[in-house]
Length: 348
Image 1 (cartoon, one colour):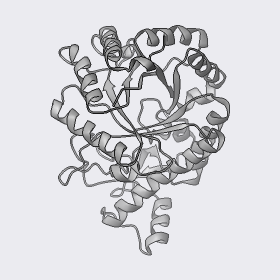
Image 2 (tube, rainbow, N blue to C red; image 1 turned 45 degrees about the vertical axis):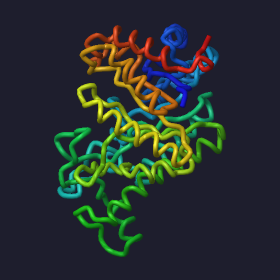
Image 3 (cartoon, helix red, strand yellow; image 1 turned 90 degrees about the vertical axis):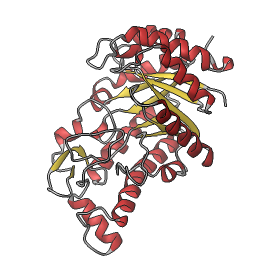
Image 4 (tube, helix red, strand yellow; image 1 turned 180 degrees about the horizontal axis):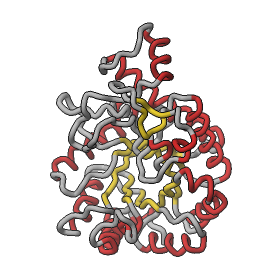
């Protein structure tokens, strides 16, 4: 399998003339795609320029994807949520303590209407190639989170809406302990809002590519995260998703883990006739030898991954999450992309 797509995430949505310079730098670093990280504030405040920034990238020959970044704190990402600020009663709730959590419950009508309204607005006005579901997940009501470690016994969401919907479906009160029925309910509900959102987008832009990026966990008998999207088969076979993607792995993890996650990603994609995508860590943490960036890019290529993305542009230079050698990481990533991207997909 040939690598057809290489890209990075990008925060610089404020001014199209500045974005143009950055996009040209991305192309020089062998990127042919860009992921615009859109927070709720960005969509509200910078919307006219988001439209223009996307057009600039398209005019340069890049693919453009819109990332629902941190929206409702149900998707991954650092930005705060306007929705949570303005809707204190539409939050996920701890099953054990009934404590409201800093994440929107996506089963509430208020959040579904809000989220689907954002998607409709973006699909109508922004000329993008697709949307990226960025690490959607139920909140984990615990003091730690780990790629390799499972959650504590507590879970979410057991708000009044989730309890009502569960009881209507199963005929008894939603238990506080996770059961087979609770797992099934959570997974189905977690997919439902994304499926409906994808249909809204495709009704407006039929050729939009929907990429669903799930947490890169093993989820075996001993370790199960219970984020709601941990059944990769259920995610992979969802008709309206076009690409199956799995998240960044920290450079400190063993290379065998990289291989295991990548093989499972490619297998799910092939099984359900989807595209495959893997991510390279380009912020905060970096490998001891920067050449490892090339080695992992080649590993992904050799294992059959079609799309490679990295978070983030310039290694996060200038942010609190910058890699220690951010600009060197960025340059090495560009070299890696140049080696693995199929020649016919490079922007000349």
